[in-house]
Length: 239
Image 1 (cartoon, one colour):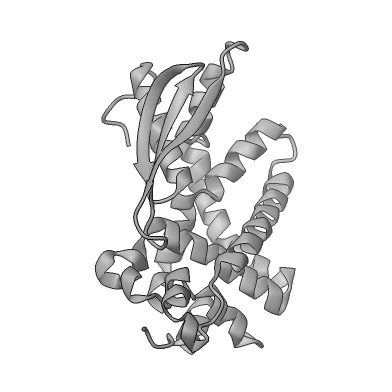
Image 2: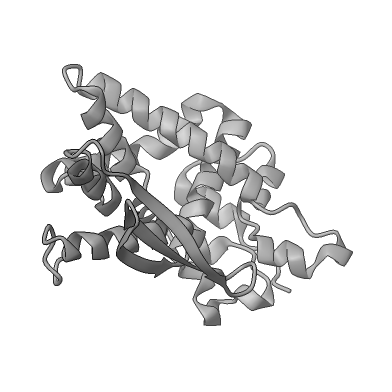
């Protein structure tokens, strides 16, 4: 069992001091820690906080885009928001200040297994941390924390484009209204704290691509990427 992390050190890094540090501790507690220490009254995991943080982040991002691009249509706003709150982006936010290093993990999700820096884990933790700030200090403090990350990434997104693999594949398929694109979960393996998911993407009944990932979203993106390569819309060596 891991010991509690340096909460004061993280507060100094993010520039926010909690009135209720239990909210911060919950945001930093991975489910593996709770699962291994139920008999010892382990803290609640950050999964519920992640749920709330996802909504708070979406609202903050939507508000920014709505104000920043008054002439943009819904499609642009939706695609840009998706690029700003995707797993890769949130993971990069977390890694920029070492959020994973402050988290509580069970032995099965130790640093040796890479859990402390796994994209899906630290992306979820960013949302949980944002929820903790929102609950402790209100929306104003949540915005003050999140907006610098979002605004900096927005510059990159505008320069490089807003479409991820799933969005790009969907746009291509929608050019033919009678075609139907579906994603199917075909495999799920590993312990609860270290799952690997496998997805296949079909055009009507035809298999276009398959992919695996540490989250369902990551696996779907991998399947969409393979489909884009198959139909000639993406170079195999493209990132």
